Amino acid sequence: MATELNHFDATEIAELIRTRKASSVEVVRAHLDRIAAVDAKTNAVVTLADDALDAAKKADEKLAAGAEVGPLHGVPFTAKDSFDTAGVATQRGSPIFAGRVPDTDATSVARMKAAGAILLAKTNLPEFSYWIESDNLLTGRTNNPWDLDRSPGGSSGGESAAIAAGMSPLGLGSDLSISLRGPAADTGIVALKATHGRVPMTGIWPREPRRDWHAGPMARSIRDLALAYTLLIGPDGADGFADVPREFDAGLRASPERPVRVGWLVDSGLGPVDADVAATVEAAADALRGAGVEVEAVHIPALERDNPLDIFSRQHVMEMKPPVQEVTAGHEDEMFAYSKTLLGSPDTPVADYVQAEEGVERLRDGFTEYFQRYDLLLLPVTTIAAHAHGLAKFTLDGQTVDAFHVSSTTVPFNLTGLPALSMRFGTSHDGMPIGVQLVANWHAESTILHIASLLETRSPVRDLHPAI
Image 1 (cartoon, helix red, strand yellow):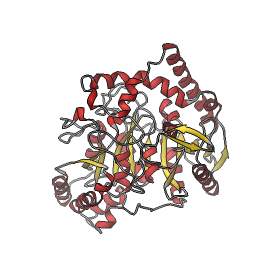
Image 2 (image 1 turned 45 degrees about the horizontal axis):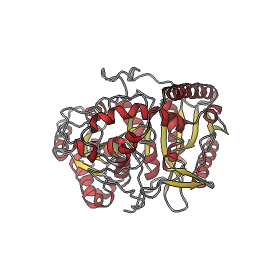
Image 3 (image 1 turned 45 degrees about the vertical axis):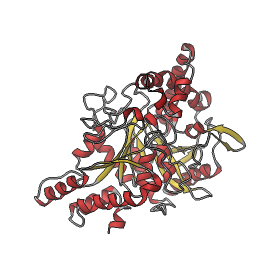
Image 4 (image 1 turned 120 degrees about the vertical axis):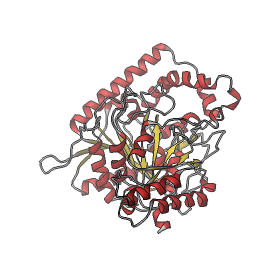
């Protein structure tokens, strides 16, 4: 049973605990044993929560006493080390914050605990969550459990590696440009970046600026994402972007009178895409078509007019530099390479910044038009499967692009705040997971989760785990 517990999803684990077929202590111990067995290879976990087993004992006692329990009662979870966790170090991947122990939980952590979940550990990230690989001077580099010579992505790469390797069934990550969806695709798990503001960013650094930042769940199954989503969303009285009632949903579900309409693309101005990735997206489109969904190839003029990566680079340099400058002042010798690169970047001229802002508005208008005709957009998560550590450039379709091009297919949905989900649906020619990305209209998460569940049942790669 212990070995199986490391590959069950959180929903099944919760049911096993609730029906007394497994205890929370057994579940937590199984995941701690798994961390001890494999994390020396992956370096996904940076801090263990010392009280996890005690919390599991209390959870079992509460259940035995017949008390009412939450939907994740006794289930362990992990959190990226940018989320504040009361009494457990949150070091943000930087020597500057080494040993920092918050007094309070981030809102999302507190909501997981309120549902009965038990914090097991904190996971690795790039310094300040700022890069597409999870490496830093304080806790080092995380390796992909499918191939230790490759990256599990960033910035939630420690979280994705931990879940993929069976060290955690469910976790929390954050996303500025790719950081939930890309790591999920790189390691073969699932992740949801809900509409901007649906999950409060309270207790996650940087506090400002937040307009492109998202927090969300990472897991092994779509039903786990759906459950965690319902627990995490809603105003918390502190994050001004979290202003939509948790009950609100703009999604459309399939019916005989109104089938869901899906458009799919692999380029549409987003640049070159690896052939294996493109083939996986087309296979997912075919699978949905075979399931009775209306599916057709599309292009989105707004993406062809304004390059999202260019907009993002002009916008975020101006917005990310101030908080990084503030916390690194006097600690320049403790900064990792990517923070130095950010601070060394020239300021965006005001006219260019305004043009970037106008570009974001045109993208929003373009997607508004698209979602008048379609309920969902299907496209790549990343432009290439998980790549070697430290890769600065790669070649796709005869074109050489820099490493950040991997996020050209995710950045548009941070700039616009649209909800997007990543799930595995294929395998590269050299055995690495390949994901597809599902995007819906603002606040239409139920549409994404509905189609993702449908696609999950038709996946050719269900229940695959890395042989680490």
